[in-house]
View 1 (spheres, rainbow, N blue to C red):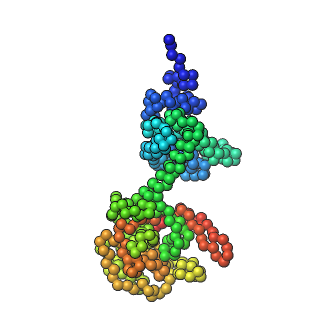
View 2 (tube, rainbow, N blue to C red):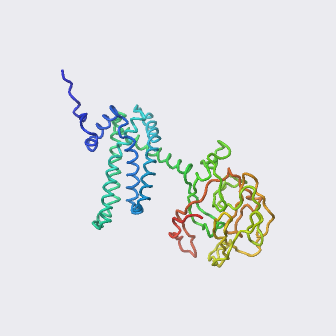
Length: 412
């Protein structure tokens, strides 16, 4: 007797590229049963590139990839991220599905994740073609307005294909598949946010004027966590899991850093590094001395604003200071003969750093040994990199204003 083939399954001779569009459940079942690793890695990389590119296009930022070097870097970084992310995301999905009674292996789920990106890849190609036609002058306002909707449509298609494939390999019904999808999305979003905040970048806002004119009250900055390596203060809630730093790299003079206050490790400060271990630091007549040599400074146009502990706007002396290492930045001098314009010599201990605020007469920093003092290497959280948002304070009853001109400004 001849056994009949399942009428719902594609013929083994039919390419999965032909069946995935209308029969994704049968396609993934045949793939995981015969070649579960078939094109999984390339599709995972292409899918991440496509997803990021479609999002950029929807936000109107894809034009920034006009330079081939920038485009190549974007593609390479996205592809590497997609390759790396495939494995932890499959493990999380496997854990979620096992809670719901699923039995598919992580290898099978990697195939589901990778092959479900095919609609997203097609969507990115369509968006790219539209943008090329637009650049050639063959576009219209209707097509331009449709780009975000196209991205959403292909994203929805990708989600549907993913759920259909997931339900088939796990033998789930509709509700278990939907719940697994939602729970997995929440856990992955948390994992992504946790990973970025812990390993890459953490946002901070500036509540005080000690770093004016470099940082203004109301600036929001990204701080790179990887620049100086990782300590307990790199982790949320700062658990004492280990001491010192992992993959440590020392800061340079002139770096603007966020650190935990030694007197109260729950408090974050942002200041500029001016003294390295072993340096002798002193202030004379408001001028910074490092190892007995005066730091070069020259007067520039007065700063106009309220940065001296008063809400009154006025002119403030401004200097351009250049450290021996070449770092150059602006400082403010609110008053002549300020309290810390003349100090004793501070000798920076080994493994510690000396911090100053750019607003010299309105900054509690390492000059105040009883409050801040020398900062241990382990207390560094990261280096300030860029201002991603800035909002000015409300004045005279007027609403707060967004300072768009500061968005994207590098912190130097």
